[in-house]
Length: 457
Image 1 (cartoon, helix red, strand yellow):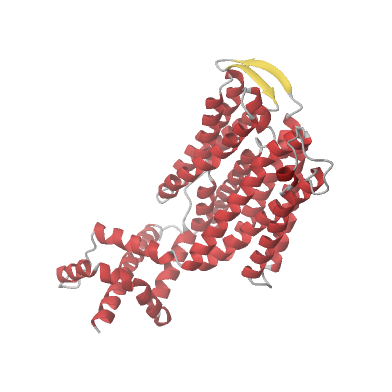
Image 2 (tube, one colour):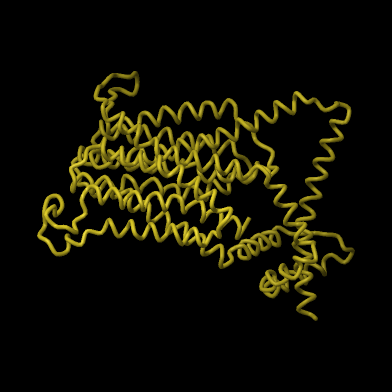
């Protein structure tokens, strides 16, 4: 009985936290509505407000599109870039990998920052992306690998994908979220396909000109991606600064109200008691002091108690299902980045491919990924997610098998590949294996992401 009482008191404690927050929000809304009682509602203002919210949402999706284009635009020319700096092909992996490593750290900062606002972190992201791309392009003129690496690192620090996802979740009602996420996925795929395509076009450029203050500008296939993306991000940031306004977090309020309703319902009370049991035992002294201090049933919640409550909710959310989905998403990223990052080195040294051919491979595979992802989204309504993920992982495993060249272990070293061996991986076999891996793993991202949202809405 004592344990059950403690569990119920623990539930009551965190229910009170949510009730206080909702009451505060209701009081704020009531005050705002009272201030507007003398002014009748204006449909024209509502239309303007809706247009503004839609435009800000479109800016976030456009930012994701630009970021994915920025990420893949340097893949095709990364090997040639490091060779022009007097370094080996292997150093191109650092050029490609610096961006996601930096994004991993900045995503935590942007996540906390976006708890209070969106405008400031989005503008900071745009500034980092503009400076990083210009610095990367300037490295060719200065013949500095450190400058190129710093440019890519700054570009990764400005990565806005975590902000874009958070913006959609916080500001989009649940009824519209599926459609908005579909647009987000299409923008991601289109950016991945368009990046290599622009790299092909820029490879034809080769000229120089002078700019005041900056000096000599060398525009070719290696510096063009940096300059083009730097200009695009500068324009994007200016538009963002002029037109972006802080949104109403209707999606967040909707989710909070839903969780509070579930917490109060009898059907969910037992589950919540079970989830809070461990926390209740760890914080029994805290709760005892809490109830002793509130003899008159007045709620007085300290900052320490709020912090403990947030820590508990985080622990309770990391269920085995969430852990599996996160592991699958990590495996997806590890696999696809390994294959894509190695492609410029492999195709240049084994098959003698130029930047145009490497970019064409990335563009074609990116374009094919879009309808495949749409088809996977369609059949997910009729099949279980686990079956779809199993099928996609099987296809990816076959693709990996096509990329393994066993003749490299038994043959003598050559400058290209063992053309006289039947089991050697030639250009066509490599293209088939690369396409199977990238298309299946990219489509797997949507299914695993949907599974994560189902495991933890």
